[in-house]
Image (tube, rainbow, N blue to C red; front, side, top):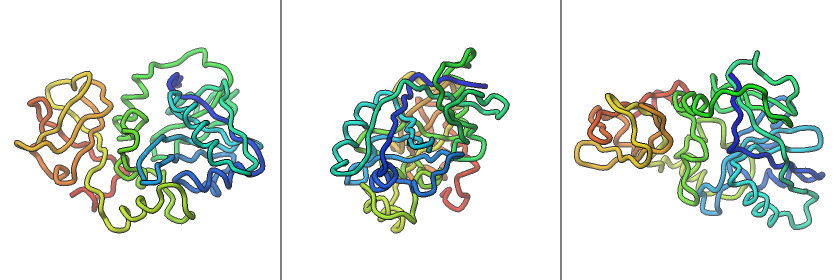
Length: 270
């Protein structure tokens, strides 16, 4: 199954300092980036709040960034402010992003393709110059990522969401071994001191579909979370820690169940 993602765009980073430039700004370690892999990462505010998430690919003398289309111009402008004397150029391309679940569907003419690095079963991502002749619907991809509990751009709130609230620490989106980057101090402190109060988790609504927008998660008479992206009975919810072990969660009067993904450590589920 190949799915074209029209709401993603591709930026190209060129110049001799492209790796070191990005290394000092994003959450993941670009020193590990090779031609046959992708790295998931994010740009944060100095206070550790999310600005944008993206996938990075090494392609020849370029680094290609697969990002939300609505963020592409913002990212190019924002990152350009940090260039100073660095030899790096940032340009929006006319390339496209496609994703899939089976290796047999990998486009033979892809500019670059790699496994989605977030978790096992996440499939692959590819950057292509021409749109595929056949594409499944975006809803197919949405339902697959909801089943896996993978966050996307629409699940974050700009300048509010912490990287760890979106499980970027559990989904290979944050490096604890690299040097400083923007927002690193708060991210590290939250991690090492165990200060995180909520996380995004996949959920199922029993006996009903989620509303098209909104949705508050209740634990008896207390609000303990909210619904983000959704499709039918399945969604990503931001849930406070005290809700994780509760069997009394509801949304719109219907029972709500947490679908613990395989990548979420068992010892953290309470």
